[in-house]
Length: 267
Image (cartoon, rainbow, N blue to C red; front, side, top):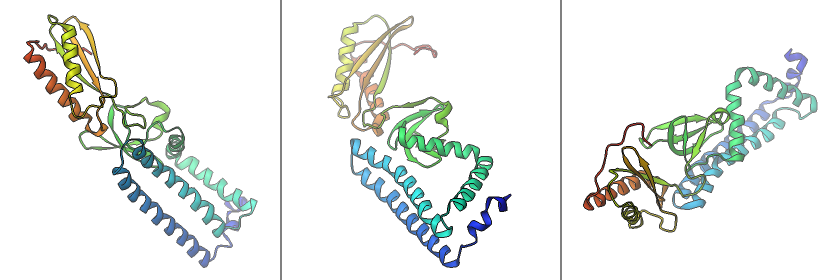
């Protein structure tokens, strides 16, 4: 079957010199790719806001372009670029990959979709199948996220096909944080809302030009307050929530507002 496809004929013209040329091209491209993957994140780390996110997002796109460029350059070096040869080689590769790497191919295709649709980028905080963390790197097959517990989780791109993906900041440095307070019902609601807003506005971590909201829910067990605000840096979200919770609780206690234990199922 391989003879029928012309594979032997396609590779018959390969010489030692051609192999060395192809190897040299691969080595040069690999060194350039590794250098870019090391230098760009360092440069991006010194920047803030959208420039940092866009620089990080350019790394996987650059890597994909380099892979495609390598294929375009190396194949004509090794194989005489005739129509029959190209059909034979790519037909055989498609057949082999189709059977052996079906799931891997699905992730690769989803990876290409990811690069164009950008449902998540390096620097985004996402949640997929209950795993929440910052996207550290995007490869051809999978994305790496780092959880708040400093655990690296590998998420194949084919999760795009059948999973819900929650993106907290979606390519920006604006990530809303929420601090929850469960209080007894007998208190001045307007006063508590004003107090919690002051707690957020006086925090040095708060983007005061972004909305600060205090949402109130009336529950059978009492009142549920949700203080929503934006930190300067999404990486500080957990310190920010802890600060809002601690300072808000202290101020409420100073005002004589009593807390209540909410049921486990309460939102």
